[in-house]
Amino acid sequence: MARPLVIAIDGPAAAGKGTLAKQLAAHYSLPYLDTGLLYRAVGRKAAAQGLDLDDPQAMEPLARDLDTGDIDEGALRGREAGELASRVAAHEGVRRALTAFQRDFADRPTGALLDGRDIGTVICPNADVKIFVVASAEVRARRRTDELNAKGRAVVYETILEEVRQRDDRDSNRAVAPLKPAEDAHLLDTSELSIEGVFREACRLIDAHIQT
Ligand code: CDP
Ligand code: CDP
Image (cartoon, rainbow, N blue to C red; front, side, top):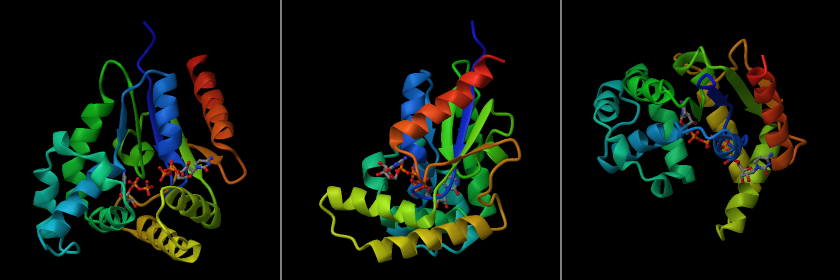
């Protein structure tokens, strides 16, 4: 039997991680974990309980007690949950509490594909293939705006661009597990690529690894 394959996809908000991750997971028959949902769920729980999201002591127990079976993707996908997530994700205790679940997910006989911010650097430093997906803030904001408008939500490009920049800033400048490519990650700039083009390029990288 082939060795189990572990693939790490990281990158900034709206770079196309989720789109690529779902395609690759289907193509290579790998279980997929969108790790952003874990942070989104903690952020939502904190807001629902009226807690101070910037207080590490209040946030850590929420992450420790998170029932991952209850994570409802539909309810967590929105912009507000993304913002809440990036605030709670800055706390070391929150990240630590979510680490074991992510590592267990990756460490299974079937292999796995995870996407997030620190998969290649912290969660799965030994992943077989690490892809760091990037695109300019303008391209990402344009895509997010188009996506939301297509869903019937009237949003303004400038507002989304500001949100994207704020999230980049917070995720890249936090002290713990900041957003950055692992030294052995492949940088995949999607700014000028179609969804299909990104998928083909990622398959090329993964197939090259499988053949070695
Ligand atoms: O998961 P992440 O936030 O990184 O991004 P996503 O939700 O996969 O992609 C954000 C938006 O960009 C979606 O509407 C995708 O359809 C779109 N996209 C695109 O237009 N071209 C790409 N090469 C990748 C994603
Ligand atoms: O899809 P998008 O990139 O907009 O967001 P997401 O992947 O759902 O992540 C939401 C927030 O959670 C990010 O802005 C990060 O602050 C945090 N996050 C993280 O710190 N580490 C991860 N592995 C995944 C998400």
